[in-house]
Length: 247
Image (cartoon, rainbow, N blue to C red):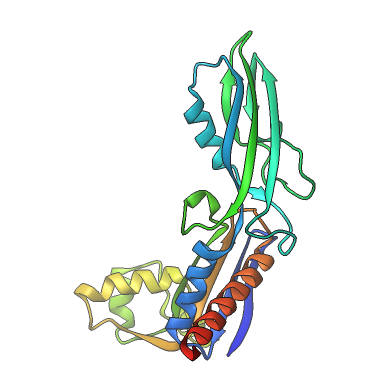
């Protein structure tokens, strides 16, 4: 199997070309990224004072969805982290107001609004974060991943193609066919829709062992660490499966 980096957006997202792999493996990696990487999320909120117009449960739900970041490998399933919040209105309470009481764990984005307080209203609480996975709840989802096969398109009627989709240039499609990653998603989607009614215009060829794989982190960790963590989690599951089979 070969993996090639096609594009990157800082520590937030990347696109990979995976060659020499079957769809089952690629899908397992996708599922590991979206549902099985353990991260911190607020799981319990203790309210000491809330004179806002919003009830406790709603505020607790908002806080639970704030992504928390911690370095991969520095925590386990039994780890906990605490945050303290105290704000008096008039003010908008933001995620940055969750002051960490545990070293190494902090909010991933400081500008997430939680609730607005009017003059004289107060909010004082303690939030307890625990480690979990998205299998249990979406608040523990560390990122999202998707994939599609590498696609090449054979244009059988260039003139008809230009007539039906003027923005597509058959020569550009041919140039994209020469790339290792094949045609881009826009071309693929347009042709895929077109050939439903006009199969005589073009033909789509999909490779069954090469995939465009996209990953985006929800800021709990850099996207590189997210992929590494997903692979590590997947390997542990396979080792456990092999051990169970051997018993």
